Structures are given as structure tokens and as C-alpha cells.
Image 1: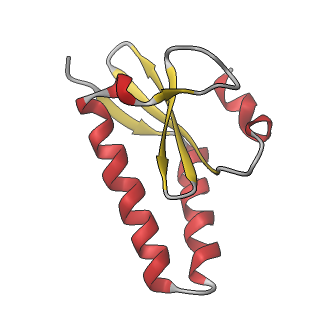
Image 2: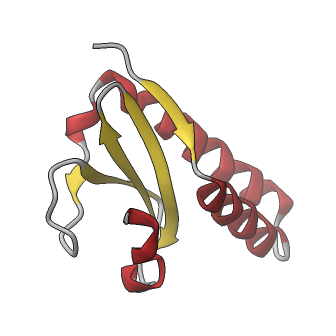
Amino acid sequence: MDYLIRWSAEAIEDLESIAEYIARDSEFYARSVVSKVLAVSRKIPEQPMIGRIVPEIGEKEIRERFVYSYRLIYRIQNSTITIVAIIHGKRLLEDVSERFE
């Protein structure tokens, strides 16, 4: 099945915030993290079910892939994969739980 990948506005904001935060110390590492997140997101449509089911939610269509210490969380719906959030692994998922409603 061919999947269309899209990013929610909140996920784009998450990635921008991560890049800005890392860039305070290193522009190089900020670019590196963003590049890796984008590369991983592009690979999701090839095998969307390879991502782990998000344990706090427990729904098979909401999954995550890890990129360094960040959780790239996405939802599979029909032929669309939506990147919903990118959060630090130590951040509580409850902070973004309203994005899944």
C-alpha cells in the first residue's frame, strides 16, 4: 500500500523548537538531528507497522520511532501517515495527548 505522509502543524513546531534549542549550543548538531528526524520520517511509509505501539496510548494505529532521544509519534489512518508529535523521551506524553483526539 502506498502511504501519503503529512506533518501536523504541532509536529512541525516541535521540530523547529528542538532545532532552536540544540542550536543554542551547536548549529551543526541541530542540523544533524533535524536531518535524522526527516530521514526516519521518510522511511515510515515503507514499513509503518515497524514502529512501536505508543505504550501510554496502546492503540495499534498510533506508533513511534526513536531518533536519538526523541520520540517521533505518528498515526496511521487508511492511506495516510500523520506525524503527530516529536517529543523528548523524558517529556510526558500527557503534554501532547490532546493531539490524538
